Length: 435
Image 1 (cartoon, rainbow, N blue to C red):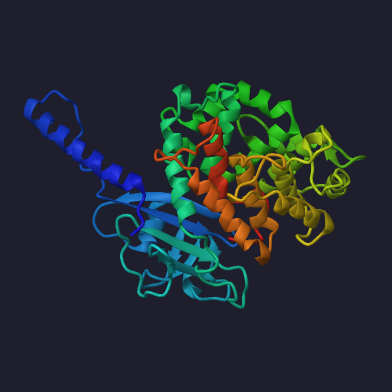
Image 2 (image 1 turned 180 degrees about the vertical axis):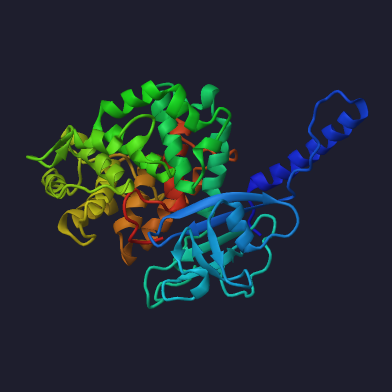
């Protein structure tokens, strides 16, 4: 079984706590709470019909069924009378009285070290260290049903989990994150990473990350969001992924804030394609309408080489920004086979390095945040021809993970925050392409 290091860490913590409890009973002065911690830890992956996966960790003692694991992970679940087949998760699927209606395209299984097993039935109890998965297909003819071929190799999910555990250790006073430049921006990036895996920011730290962003640093968050449409869009994306309302977060109406920066005459938000791309992605994540003029503006800003430069500040395309713009185009309604997207993808493909990574600008050394963004873009818009590049980019990210879970870079905090969504297979826009 392929297990996460934090499972072993949990068992070590259990042993230490047991010793402390024994000493506390003997001397009566340590103040250690001696209730027994859970014996087992497993991971629950849920992918809804939009193709975006969510990963949560559960801990328990005794026996646990897959349905119980879903409930323990915080999902609203409806199962059949036997408690084995899934009728619906979070209302997606079928009602209990008609569990196998045509809308029930749920498949379930467990990672078996090298492949997904969705054939074993009835589902066995969840074991310590398991990664169990539930995936909702999108095609009513069951042509995309199942796990194998639709969920990625589990190594990315395990790596994302390890990265999050490292991020937890980096949380500072007041529940914030500090990269030495802007604690609000660094904390927003962590919120985005948490949202990519389905974590609750209100339960992340004490005081929590949510307390820091919505209370302690509310004024700073407002200044951050008002600084540029790109900042407001990134915050809206993080807020939406975290399951919060972007129209009322920390006293801000983020969609309205972005709307105030939209120029109907040009189709742009703020200063150019950078602001516009992130505003579009924020609106898309929040379920808000996106103006039709956006696609025309982004297409008009495309450079001759097929890419884009941040807010058109230079004549050379930036690989990372191009990857983000491609996702924004798809979110705004452009087709994956449209000319602007195809030209952008061609630039990305031509920028690949032999190690599987991508440079911020080509040619150049591979850069982790850029590789993460390209991986997301290929997962969004790439076809079968990009399967090899997707696997190579994922392998490059995995190769750069340190033993402590961080990603090796000039700023491990920044790189780790940026890479978690890509490791999870979560695109900023629609996820229509490869694994």
